[in-house]
Image 1 (cartoon, one colour):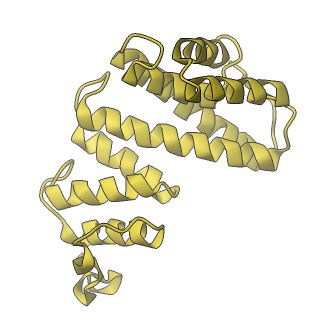
Image 2: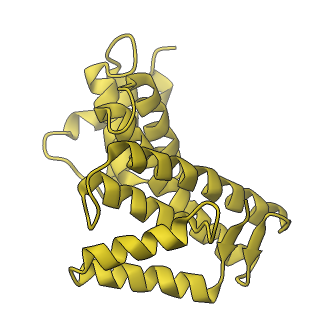
Amino acid sequence: MAVTFSKSTDEQVQHAIDLHEAGKLEESAELFETLGDPNGINHPLAQVLLGLSYRHGWGVPVNEEMAFKYLRIAASNSALVDKIAATGQATNIKASASNKSRKGIAKGELVLSIYELGNCFRYGWGTEKDPESALKYYETAARLGDVDAMSDAAWCYMNGFGIKKKNKYMAAKYYRMAEKAGKVEVGNSWVWKEKYDDDKQKK
């Protein structure tokens, strides 16, 4: 399957987003479906947004299984685009944009889809609940710069979700990352205590 990026398809995705923001949810979802068809245009951002539309019932009936399906496809496609853009190879991607711009676009879509897959595994949306997988996806998205994923990874460590026991050291690490990225949560001043510094963490 080829992943398609072009000025035309990107403009169509933006048009679908504009329709969504204007409250024309059914038209928006229909266009996301056309653009995100794995056997057609196969646009990763359209797949992410179609997945979220299925999750929340935006213009389509709520279908968590379909939401999970499209988020997984989007993550796979975005990872492929990111890899191809990094190597300069374009054998599996139809694009008119530069490698550099494709790489930036792909990373944003990849981060969003990975974070949302974490939510699927955390809450059992379209798949079985899997705390370990949820934490894994949150940590991956956090490393790629998603601030919500940083906070959610911290929450997992604070609450022993996806791990055998609570780990305040790791929770502090991710809460610090989130604060540095601009997301400050009330009552989290403890994360800056010296005992939670990297060189103080227990192995």
